[in-house]
Amino acid sequence: MEKTSQLNSSIERLVNPMPVIAGSVRTLLSTCGKPGCKCMRKNNPAKHPYSQLSYTHAGKTKTMYVKKADLVSIKEMTNNYKDLRQASLDLGHETAVLIKTHGVEVAGQIVRNSFDRAKRNYLGMKPQSAIMRNMRISRDKWKSKALARQDASEKDRVKIRDMKKSRGKWKNKAIKAQKKVEELQKKVVDAEKKISKIEKNDSGKKKLYRERGI
Image (cartoon, rainbow, N blue to C red; front, side):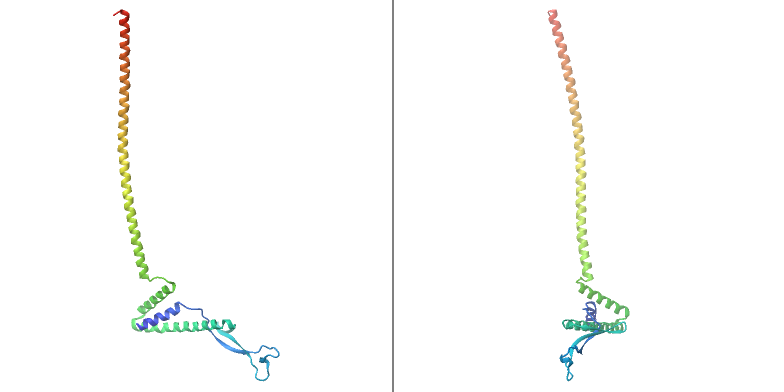
């Protein structure tokens, strides 16, 4: 348990690095060259202190003047580099111990899992198990909504089908009723024609009787 805690600590230092500078700061003394300055005295000259950053790049040593206002920040960056380098060395040692105890594959998986966990913590991400659980919950919710929509759609389909069926039924009844009305209207017209004809015949007969004096 203690080894795992040390491993996680080393990895967290590697995953969450602060600004670093691979160098060291030292204080040097110089003269300003101004006549009458204390640094120009022949006896016990008081030279001016200044800070200088020394670092190596591509095999060459380079230096940089450090402003007094930046001195604290630059020293923190050099200390951050030392801590980052030490964390890398610690991780190598702890990985070797895991390999002796569990073997290469298991040790590699433990280190990868620890890196994944540290990166998630650094980015504010949830663990993979929590992400999968939330995905399952979200999937189940969408599935329930989809089933509800499907059920509602089926009910609407049945309702529309019944409405079409009912409309067709009433349409047929209306057509039949219209035909009956038309037939009755035709009968009425025929009856009116017959009555008119009978009345005309009766009128002709009455006229004939009057002419004959009957």
